[in-house]
Image (tube, rainbow, N blue to C red; front, side, top):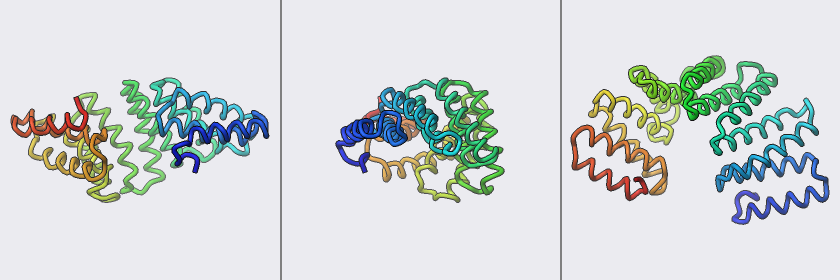
Length: 275
């Protein structure tokens, strides 16, 4: 409830002060409040530099107080800490934190578990953001192996990992391979979610990029226009995903030589806050 009100930060601060005074600074409830407060800062106002020391302090308390019997609590704090480190663009320390989390999940659940796959997926994104394409693909392939063990063949969650693989292929100029992977991701999302789900539009936009690369403009156009339609119906004007798709549509028409449409969508892109 605290995270939903406008005064949430003040409420967390007051709750933390009360618990530290009444229970002591190293009580487990203090760690819980620190973790919740840090999560709010990281996901709401996006202040990872403020969140990171809170997560670190919560982690130290939890490790000292819980021991082996409550490792899930430590895992939850590690997850939040890794996210904050990633938002702060500290990809190397975020990777180290995520690797610690990965080992903890393997110890808790075994090597073939949904939490292991999710952490490998996060590691692949961290490596990709750090321009380590080889490392990103290694993590993504390992995630795919776990998915093969724990998810049905047609499960749409497989598409998140396929997106990372495809982006790595695109960055490595392996567009044919990327196109094959993205067609599979799009099929999974259309079938497992719906054609009009926002995650489906992400696959459409990525696939369109590959099609544009080989000048398959006629096939790329309906994918991007449908993605834009869904984004407009889902997100407010100026949302980053809507701006992203507008930029892709403008680029399509520019490369296709349809200058009137390119100029029209460039104007819409700028109206949405793009430059």
